[in-house]
Image (cartoon, rainbow, N blue to C red; front, top):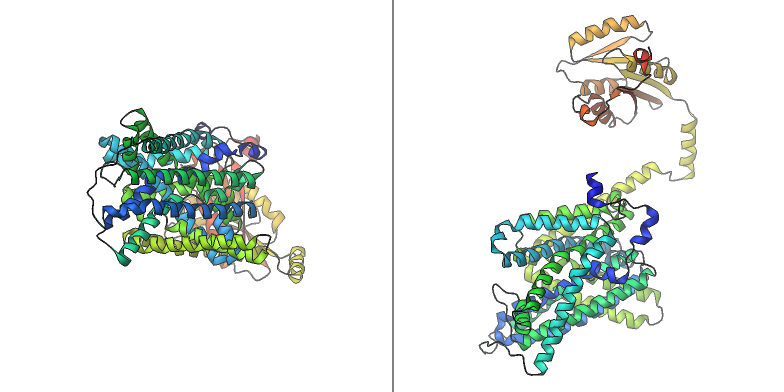
Length: 620
C-alpha cells in the first residue's frame, strides 16, 4: 500500500510506448543538466582568468566561443551516434564497438562516476542557493541535500513521463528568464543604457606559458557547461518514434540553447566587467545589472535554484540506462536490466541515489569540495566516443565519411586536451579520487563478466559430445541415499518418511541432532511406537549446535561419482509473517549450508500451520 501511494499504479509492459517522451518533455528530462550549467560555467571561466589580473577578463568571451564551438562539434558527433546506435549506450557502445572492450569499459566507468558527481554537485549547488537566501538552514545543508535527492529519485521511480512533466516547468522557466536576460541586456547595451562595473584597470600580471596555462584552465572550467551532453545518446529508446530522429532534434535544440545562453551570459559579463564575488554569483550580478532588483531578478534566482536541483535528473535517466546496457552485456549484475512497476530501471535509480547520498555526506554538501571531482569522467568518455566514431567512419567509408571523421577527430583532440588539463589542474584537489575510481570500476566490470562467463560455461553445453554425455546422465539411474532430519514425531515427519519410499526405499536415514538430551529421549520413545523399518540415528552435538553437525553427517556419507544424497527437510509455514520471528529458522539455515555441498539435493516438505486436512490429527 505504501509502495502504491509513493509510486502510483504499476504499468504493464504493453504501456511502455505511452511512457515514451515527446521532444517537449524529453528536453527538460535529458537536458536540464547541460542547460543548468549556464548558472556556473561563466563563473568557472572568470575564476581562472582573474588569477592573471583583471585585464585577463577580456579572454572570457573568446573562451566561451571556443567552448560553444566544441559543444557544437560534440553535439554533431552525438547526433551521428544516436542514428548509428538507436538502442542507446552512447560513449560506452561507441567505444566498445570501435575501440575494443577496455576503452568501452573506461568510457562506461567514467560516465558512471560523472553521473554520481552530477547529482552531488547539482544538489549541493541548489542547496547553496537556498542557504544563501536563508542562512539559518546552512547547518542543515546535508540533511536538505539528502531529502532533495530522495525526492528527485522518487519522481523518477514514478516513471519517465511523470518526471518529465514535473521537471518541465523549472527548465523552461530558466530558459525563458535567462534567455530574456541575454536579449534585454544586449538591447540595453546597444542603446547605451547598460553601464559596466567600475573595475580597477591594470595589465596582466602573468604572461607567457603561465598565461597560456591559465587560459587552458579557464577553457577547462568553461567546458563544465558540456556535462550532460551525452545523456540523450544514452536514452534514445525513451523517445517516441521515430526515436533516433527525435533524439537528434532534441540534442540539437539543447546544444543551440546552451550555446546561446553561455555566449550571452559570458558576453554580458565581459561588457559589464563582472568578476566573481563572495555572496553573489556572476549570473546574479549580471541579472541585477540588467533586471535591477525587481521581480525578474528574483524570479531568475528561484528558477536557477530549481534547475540546479533538477539538473540531477539527467543522471537519474542516464545512469540507469547505461547500467542496463552494461548488464545486458554481462558487465554488471543482471538485476540492472529489470524494469520496475513504472517501466523504469529501478535498481539503477536506487544505486545512484545511495552513491550520491554517500558522496554528499562525505563531502558535507560543500560545492567547492565537489567541483574538483566533476567533469573528469565526462570528458574522458567524450574523447573515447569521438575517437571511436573516427574509427567507425574509416571502417565503413560511407558517403561524406572524410568530413565526419575530421569533425570527430578535431573533437577527440580538443576533449582530450580538456581531459588532461582538468586532471592535472584539479588532481591534488580531489580529481585523484576519480582517477582511482575509474580503474576500480573497470576491474569490477571485468570481475562480473568473468563470473557470468564461468556460469555460462557451466550451464550451457559447449559441444555435441557434451550434449551426448548429458543425455547419458539424464537416462541413468544413480545410487540415491535419502536423509530425513527429525526433531519430533508428527504428521510432517510422517509425510517426509512417506516421500522417501518413492525416492530411495532401500537407503533411508532418519537423523536427529542431539542438542537437548530430554527431547531426544522423548523422540526415541515415540519413534519406537511408529513401528517402521527405518531406524533413528542420533548425531551428538556437545556444543548444542544443529546446522554444523547436520552438515558433517551428510558429508560423512561420502558418495561416489554416481551417488546422490537427497536431504529432506521438514518445515512448518506459519500464517503471519511476524510469527516466523518467533522460531529459530533451523530449516532455512540448514538449506543454506547444504547449498555448499555439490552432490546434495535438498527437498522441503512444508506443513502450513492452520491448514485443514494435513496429517492424522487434522483429518479426524
